[in-house]
Length: 69
Length: 143
Image (tube, rainbow over all chains, first blue to last red; front, top):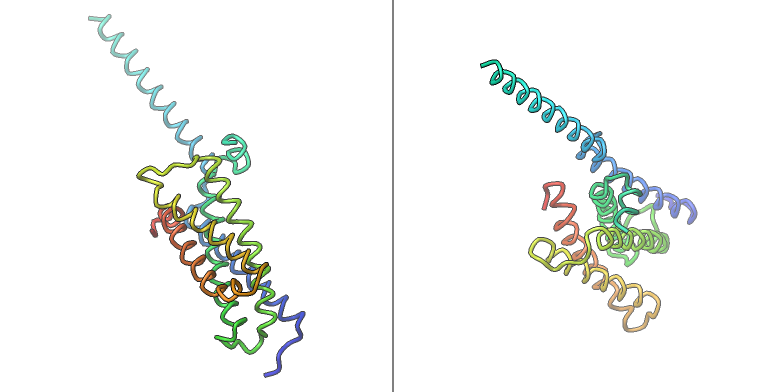
């Protein structure tokens, strides 16, 4: 088998390095999933707000029930 | 500093560090292959030893740049602690930076120190693997 020119060898080995880096990024990103930390925090914050709202409503309801008695 | 790193990574500090560290580890494995071809220990028909060593140096420069970036992010965001959790990671990472510095010096100076390059390269790879396992690997559930 004839060896390609020096330039082609260099380009090929550099492209292989790039491909390795790209595969590493893809594999790790796939592990994390599509959601970023910022989005996840926002979602958690919304969930907390919703839970607080439910608690407040329950407290209000209990107060009204006590007043009714 | 913390805020700058947070802004730069859009709140995904750990994720960005894990990705960069994994790219470094993958390229380091490729470095071993290139070094083996460069020193004539392995024959890859389409790749000459000169081309393998040239790419080894280019890829090595990228690895140094990425490693220093990750280290700066680590120290800048988490600070430097030798406590229970990050103790091993911090010590091994320091040893890694030292080994990289010695390897770069060996490349520049050559001579007797140059003969130690294969040993230094293997040490850098081993330290890099342990550093990755105690941080990124842990984060990904591998370490």
